[in-house]
Length: 488
Image (cartoon, rainbow, N blue to C red; front, side, top):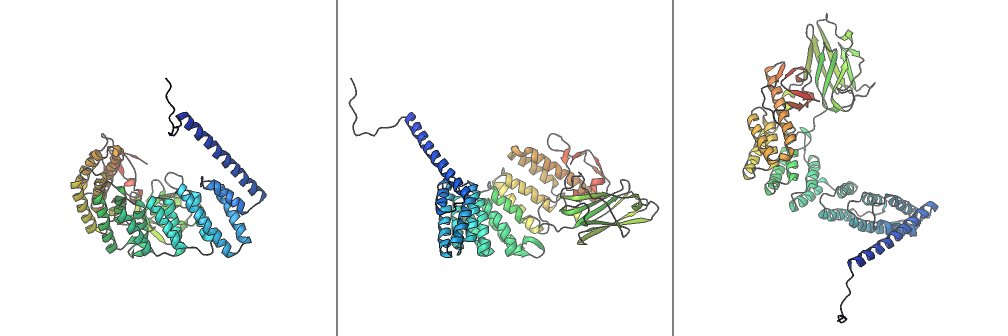
């Protein structure tokens, strides 16, 4: 018996009918897209820079804001209309353009072309409303606080509108208070604070009073959420060293190899044939060819040259080599005495600073206080990898030899808490062991680095990367290594 007709009920499409309807809709949109794109390129080819062309690009960019060619065409149209119209008409045109751009950003908030075009429009609008643009940035950063396109645009607006660094710092206060896990805001603070409160003794760093206040803020952040990495990275920056000035740290000369090496505080490039790096032997200029250790002449901390036989006369009581960088901004002398196979000269501060990671040594009381705070947190969060790593780095910044045993213990705990990075931690641990041995050698003025008695990580492996060459030139770089295999 057939079922009676069911009146008053909506007919539900089957899966096949739905798929077919979607296919037809896609084909319709594709035809419209292709037709509009064809018309746009035809207009550009024939030079029709009119409002109709502007409307056609609206149709495409409204659904695909990453079509860079159409943004270029759109700028050509606007420039043409600007020449033909009045400033008032240009103001209205740009206002409509900004509104359209905002709708495109809702489609794709990370569209390179859209943000770039917005910068261009703001540079051409007769009367820009910078306050409105700051509000727009704030709105999009509420949606995605790490949208680097929006952050770049905000910096552009801040520069053009001459917004003060203090106002921008207040803006980061608002974002961080709302969400501690806002890495971009923490990073922005690291750029603003040195401008607002510069430390005259350390260029690029804030004053100690501001530093202490920031440490209190960041402690609140990682005590609230110890697993969030944003605050930990900012904490490391607060305790970090200022960028060292470009100076010559060490000069080393070898009679046996007939060579001379220069170590800098920052990577430099010595252009062949230039006067960037000059060498004088007994006050007479010496023409040499500088090169890096690997011969690739990339930016490097260490540069070497071969010395002619005339510069190493064995019968002379001594030879004085003077190296000068860029017009005398930095220079250093090295004396090679008769009967000696080598000689060097370096800053006395290098021995203490070179292996104390990237954290500052100047505020040891601050570092000690931070170490105690991190230990308190570690007692509450015994397996927190960020806390454990920070403790290791703080101990190394304070005194790598005094804290060596305790540091190795924390390495074991950290490896258990973060097994995915065990290879990296093994390498870091081995590196610290090598550096500690070099420090002991320096204090003892020894010529041999004996690492055979060390307890190595990673199943007894005794291979580590050779780093920190600026502290090794004239020292451990030319010493005898025992019990360890080094890799460059």
